[in-house]
Length: 107
Image (cartoon, rainbow, N blue to C red; front, top):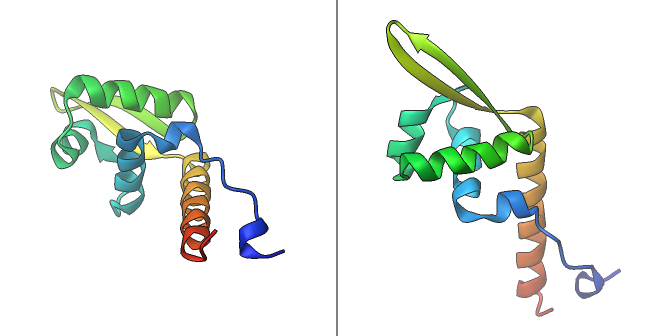
């Protein structure tokens, strides 16, 4: 099968949304098992409302886990990438690489 005869990828619609993709890439590349809500908000320059909505979608999809706790007397919301989220992100990135390779091949 040639590069041009391959089917075009159908990217995961949950991940394909810009804000959710940025969140997953952030979590995947953070080097820690859990990132704090306020750190994500600050580093990605997102509003609290938008970040909350996007995290809800990712959590409902099983791509992230959200943990609420108190650190001392302060509330803390921790966000971590689940194994299913890691696999889904890797699959998404592979599909995008395939699409780019097809475009570069002139398909």
